[in-house]
Image 1 (cartoon, one colour):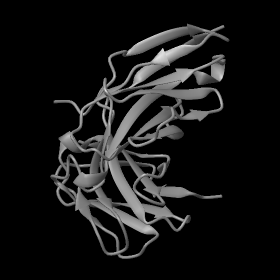
Image 2 (cartoon, helix red, strand yellow):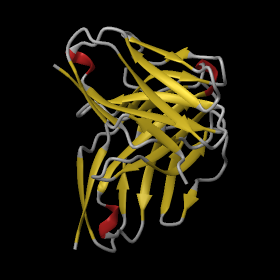
Image 3 (cartoon, each protein chain N blue to C red):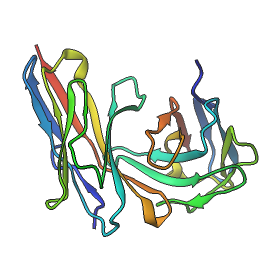
Length: 112
Length: 115
């Protein structure tokens, strides 16, 4: 009963390093999303995908890239990490755009 | 302007009492959806209830109901018979259908249920 799995759960980076966060879902959902959650600001949409091979920008896309080469996976990349990207990152998926989103457990990322 | 506004940073409710968590939204899109999520201290996000902009009746899911007032652009969550396990952060969210499925979350309300 995996649902949405995020890898890794924790990571510490130095400024300027790059990394990729992996999101995998086993529900055959079309839609996938990446959010960041900062204290006092709720969740903000970074990028999303409405199907395999598609991606689109959300509210705060700068500094991030995404890819959806396979339907079940949605990758979030940070090319050159900055301290402002310290946050908790959530991946989510949904069957349609109006369906409830199923969330992963989050990735806590700290950038020094 | 904020797309989703939750004006109550923190709320307290006595166990077994009902509580209303406020949410107002701002959109010019005629087709939109409103969601409520719960985030316990463990951090996971749990879907509670959904209301579509064209739905005629207020949504209900067990002890959760959504008081949808379209003209006032409000979508308040009502939790009846509060339980200790309801203590958590609650987020209101909106999806705008005609702007490419953008999702917006509010800043959340922290609910504490008092025994």
